[in-house]
Length: 290
Image 1 (spheres, rainbow, N blue to C red):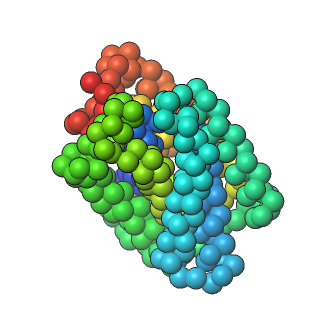
Image 2: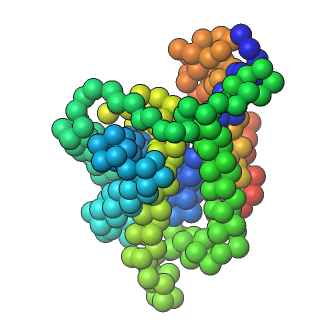
């Protein structure tokens, strides 16, 4: 077993985890909302990207934009249906509704795209680089670079921008924020639209690494949950470090122990960390609760 190759695989996987978790980091940590249809948005965006490339013949970068647009639309539709629930911060009902949306998206994807696995081929997948005797593709490098840029921009916006402060004010007390002149509806719609676009971007970049199936969303929900909680809810830097660490741990555990128990081991790590440090990593304000 090539240790360097496993480390590289873990770094790529970790950045993929972190990128998939970007939307939920904002949604759960800043707006204090949940979306258990997150994984199904990922799945649907993967199919949309594949369809744009294989069906419409669009260039891969354009297909990414198409997927992100689809993610925005899905996010807006979900928020429109749940607007009253988000105003009242009824998290239990929001969980149920988003789970329902997730099942609907899975059914729609099955009807539209079929039940057969699809493979998204991109020009970046055929470009290889050798690093210390190990191999990494340009597609993997794109995942790493975009993830770093996304987290850097998100950290800047939430820490220094007015948008992050406004979103946290709305999350703290929507009615008070509305009395202060903040358009609460616009904030909620913006957060869900951002989540849809972010997870669609992650999907379009990560999906070429694995077959695209209607069932892939479940694992993404689990991974996202682990990353956000392990990193400290609302901590942008914490989510990035948690995603990277989880990816490296999963790759090494799968390579040297057994991939069948990698998820179980990841939850074991989550339990240990939360017992020793209940707030998670929480490496910075990032909108998290103190």
